[in-house]
Image (cartoon, rainbow, N blue to C red; front, side, top):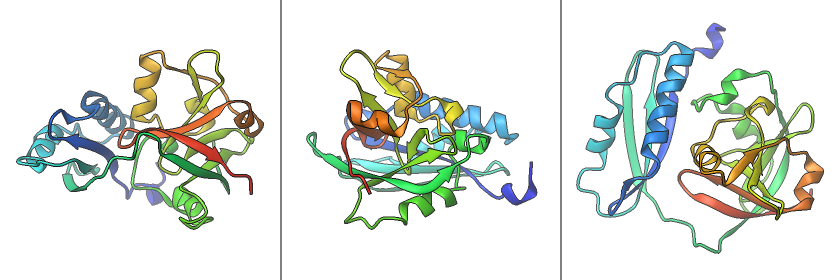
Length: 213
């Protein structure tokens, strides 16, 4: 691996609810283990212990961020979290910044986020709640913090394939396993042919309105 790319950590961002515990915990831990193995990191054996300790005594929803580095160090931080209203709609725009479908590190969640930060910086919070990125073939990939889903009204949601250059999001994985989503390439024009959603494990599935630049 390029030494310039070695200084990063794996990330998992989880939602904790006092009544039900961590949402999608099994999928988060499985992705962490898989990512560590793929990148040659040690096995993150203490992840669950650190997560449980971080939320001990919590009586309100939390955003929980776990990082795991190449030296095997696990760190967990928490912050208060307010769930979105069920009828929330996010305004989304398309970034000029592009993803490279050949970049295999896009397929794991890491602290290497410069491309997503550049895309997000193209619009102010007043202009967009989320920004979607395309790859070099003009295929829709993902948002800066979300996976993309298209409801065409005739079956499961369509979500872009990993080969387009994107993260295997935990919510995305869950919906595919439940057969509520299927993999299929999405081009920019396709977004006009159905209802657009974005989502992640922290916030769930969110209705989205595409705003053309």
